[in-house]
Image (tube, rainbow, N blue to C red; front, side, top):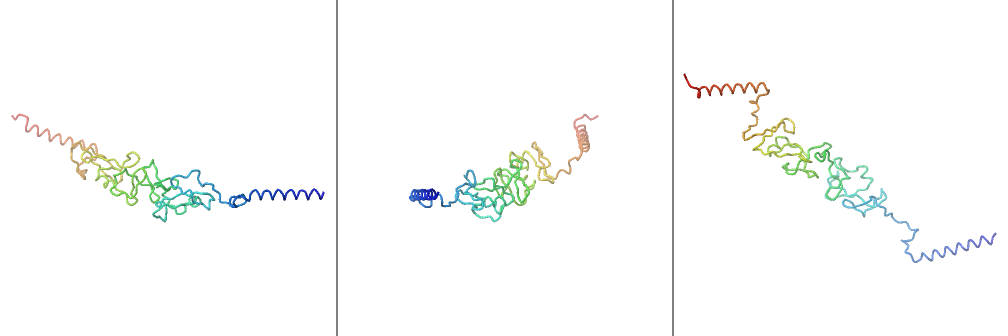
Length: 239
């Protein structure tokens, strides 16, 4: 029994020596007993908007998203690499921006709604105007342009011949002022669009406009009587 045990130990020692001899030519940093950082990717594919070489220590994987300066509370001039844990918590991200949407080579496009016609600004949705409608837009988005401050009024838009109505995936239809008059009410959207047909239309002249159908009929009857009287005076034979 003792002979068998010693023989087993001897065989194991020879095998171990053989294994060490076999690995002696392999650099130590490539030997299987040395711990190495995993090369597992954080994301399946990393194209535009990613830094594939950065190590995400919290997620224990390689690759980080580059977040656009405009989407960050801290702002900045260059995109900032952020890890998965930070992004999941929304750490330092403005609520108006989507870090899953790519914009200009980085992640953090402004949130939109209604097929891109509305954009989130300070937690509320405002109109996205077609290019050229706004005199001084604050920001360009995928479907047009927005102002992040006070929104334009109907009257301000009408001065340039625009009405705040949907035009494809943005707001702002142009109506030639020589052909149309945009009448504004209390809302941003025009209350009426008046076809001029060559006539002049004066703003504020609505006080002379009949308010009801009966008032319009009375005014028409009065005009007709005046016309008939003038016709009788000048064209009918006198006795």
